Amino acid sequence: MRHLQRLAIAATAGLAVASALPSAAAHAISGGSPVSAAPWAVQVYNDGHFACTGTMLTDRWVLTAYHCYNDDPGTMSVRVGSVRIGHGTKVAVTKIRHLDTDGIDDVALFRLAKPVKAPHIKLAAADPARGAVVDIYGYGSSAPRPKNLHTATARVTSVKHDDIIGRAIWIKKVSGGTEGGDSGGPAFYKGRQVGVLFGPNQYSSVASHRAWIREVTGA
Image 1 (cartoon, one colour):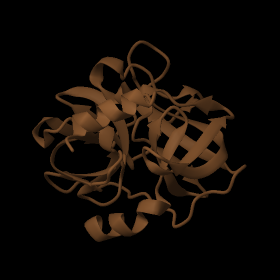
Image 2: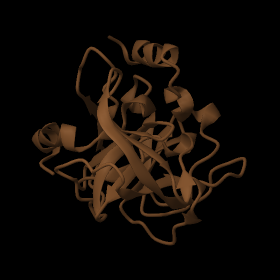
Image 3: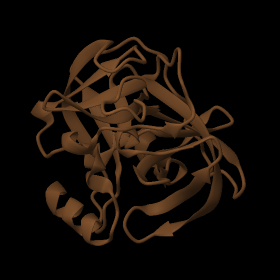
């Protein structure tokens, strides 16, 4: 099934997966605070327009959301190494890896055209428990255009199967919540990434993808 068909399925389910498209990527973390340094953070661009947030897994692989991809790797690129939108090392994306499921498995791996020296995030082997407080990240502010990486804290309300994306982590605001420009961005628990943002306050489980990610990237 083509990617855009998958987006249509998600739209009928009432989920904001199309928020990663350039026309809607106007906001990021609501509340929270700006980040002064996060060299592992990735800005994902679709045809030159900021679309999503991601994280560095290795020098050649980025972890983000599949709905950030528009069916043509040639139009995708990333920036790495700056908390400011439009800054950092720009690198083209040459390959997209994704689990082909009957639903919309929203975790994707972007292979970069060349290695980028940046710190790599660590992945969790297990989901956080209900009630755990996680750190969430996304680019921008509540201004008309995203400008800077922001972070906030949120509490896990449940971890359960979702018919669209598989195992999902649901959160609620503590110091801040999620917005469109955060799609593909991370949730961290005890220093390890536990989630990839799919829609409002809903993250795909990293632990449920751990074996596949290791098989593809070696991370």
